[in-house]
Image 1 (cartoon, rainbow, N blue to C red):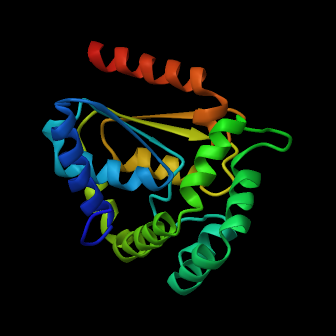
Image 2: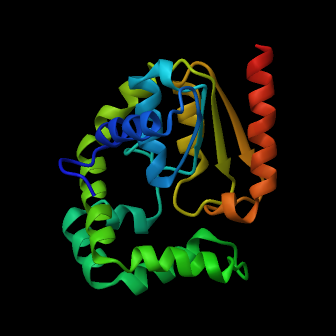
Length: 211
């Protein structure tokens, strides 16, 4: 936990502190879901502090279509109530919609996720992030337009929350970007298709070096 707000821009500043602490000067930053917006903000605000950017399955344009669950969670009153009072229901719904029917994640990973999410202070911070993101959503596209680092937009074809239109518009907005749609991929594709995504990122890395 840290004081202050939790907008994507402020979390990008926090990421800079973490990178300095870890002595990472030019990392490849990969952002997904609520990590997508701060990663994009970071690339805009600190262009000399990353090698390249990868963005996956995020709400990057507030005026584009999303699932009904995301539309509800963007309403702060409902968001705060649901995260405070219905953590089990939200977690179960996330598992159901983040994976294909019949898919399961490793039991230890599921336990790790739930241990974090069941903590009230974690859920309070998530609610704080949701409010910060919603309050600054209209400001973010102007940051995307300034990004110049090599950017891979790696999107799940079957993400139930963030349709492909989010990815295609982001690709159109960032000049030096490439778009790859992962056929059959769902929201948690970094878990279910880890090797495939690692290969895609490695290939993008090599192509960026050639350029």
